[in-house]
Length: 80
Image (cartoon, rainbow, N blue to C red; front, top):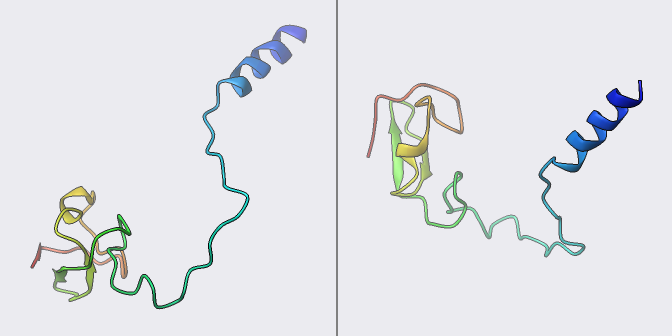
């Protein structure tokens, strides 16, 4: 039983974690309205066909796998 406990403790010690800041700055509801929903850094510039949602910047559509709109989950055939 002790071997199992020791193995589990080693597993837990090696789990990666993200440190969350103690103070998170407030975000205005309209401040990120035009930002890419994937990277949240660049402005939305591309819309998906056929759903028409303009949701992503120039760099992010190629990152989606499977190719589905992140807003409605509909498969897209192209983006512009």
